[in-house]
Length: 249
Ligand code: PEP
Image (cartoon, rainbow, N blue to C red):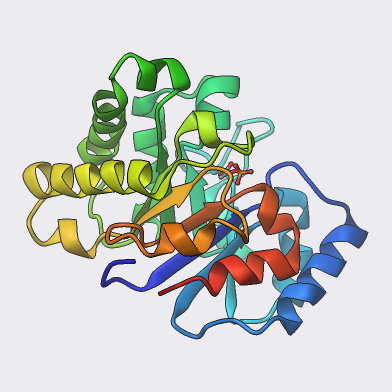
């Protein structure tokens, strides 16, 4: 971990019922969590109110997506204004499932990030390469292009956490090695230094996502440029998610 405050997000994706979420929240409320870690969970939209009303203040609530501009005639979308109305503090944008299954493009994601930031939400800005892109030696090119789309759009980097999530590691059980993750995190920081500013680069938290679990988080957390995690599957289990949070070194 670097010098910034460790940041761990749980992305619950399209999982859960009122009952299972009530149990997960109870487990998180009773877990012992290291104090010096920002902890955020991202429930499905329909459970945000339930979670916000039952979870400890120690844990902030994030959305998994938000609309690109002010709400209005956009069937099926949820606006930043509505998220704020529910006390949501963060939004995950550019997740690989939205890029590759739903088809969201770099420029659209950049605009969403800009709008959310302007309205006062923090943004967990996801980037990451596909397996074929890694095998073709294009990992840095892909990550830098996705980063540039954010950089071209956002008003400031103050409220952005970058999540590096190699797509081949998401939900596959194939975690990046600490060395593989560190290599890309260092390259991202170098890119920020050269393309954003010398001030933003060291203070922007870069978190890793992709099959993080209670067994591999400690080794990953030791790496200099890994400032936390975005966790999918393992965030649905309260005790294991607590272990990951507490892997800060
Ligand atoms: C994610 O989708 O953000 C993620 C990291 O998923 P998992 O931990 O399940 O690989």
